[in-house]
Structures are given as C-alpha cells and as structure tokens.
Length: 174
Image (cartoon, rainbow, N blue to C red; front, side, top):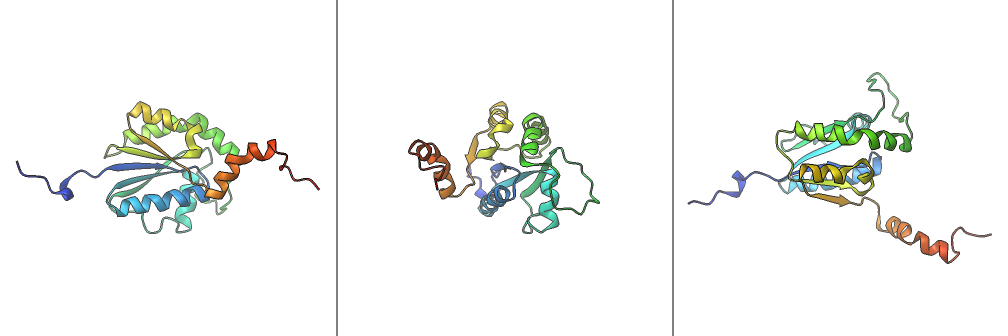
C-alpha cells in the first residue's frame, strides 16, 4: 500500500476561544496565525461586537477569506446595530462575562455542530473557563488547551499576590 502524501492528509482543525478583551484577542490571534502558517485549519471565535470592531479597524490582518482560516461569532448580549459608529462597548467586562456565563455553552455547541470540518482541538483563553469551555470540550470529546494570555510579570503578580499580602507588603503604606 502506498503512503499518502502529507499534503493530502486531513489538516488538524483548531478552534480558538479568546476572552472578549482586546489584549486577549490580539494574543490569541497571533498564535492562531502562527499555527495556520504551519498548516493547521483554524476557526477563531469572537463575540459579535468584538468581531465587528476587529474588522472595522483591520485587526484581522488580512486573514478574512484566507483558505483554512475562518472567523465565527457567538452572541455577547449587545445589540447588533450596524449603524452604531461607536467603538465603545455598552457593557462592562463583568456584564459581558455574566452574559457569556449563561449563554456561551449553547452558542458554542451550535457553532461547532455547524462547522464543515470537525475540530480536533480547542485552544481556549485561560480566562474563559468560567463559560464552561472545559465542559464543552469534554462533551464534544475534543482535547482542550488553556492558553494564558497574560505576560509573565502579570502572572507572577497574580501568583504571588497572597504572599505579598501575608508579608504585609501590599497594600503599600505611607
């Protein structure tokens, strides 16, 4: 039996789920571009309002319509008024998070069911676990990777916050 050339094999399909904030989306999009460049099929999921802002300001970096890279959206509870010229969200991050907490799972499962190519992996922002992304991956029987988008110094500050409080170094005095 002849070996199938690697170009004819089915590409792995990775679904990206960033936390709906600019720095998180930008970081996840960089990783998605890199993996796409290495030959993986990518589906990048944004909330509807962040998706509109991303494309309005050219943040997609020319990836829209590129074979093997697709953008999909899930609702975020914001009105989809396309006439609104405002770039400012009308909800706080907490309100968007609360909306996603109760609505993301069903929207995501519907989105995945409609994909042409079934995903082989999910790369999820570590901040999105509140939206039942791990449960969704288990339900779909798809491996999930939590990708922490914060810088190392931010992670260390978060990691050591309790130690700093216990030693009385935080909050600063005087």
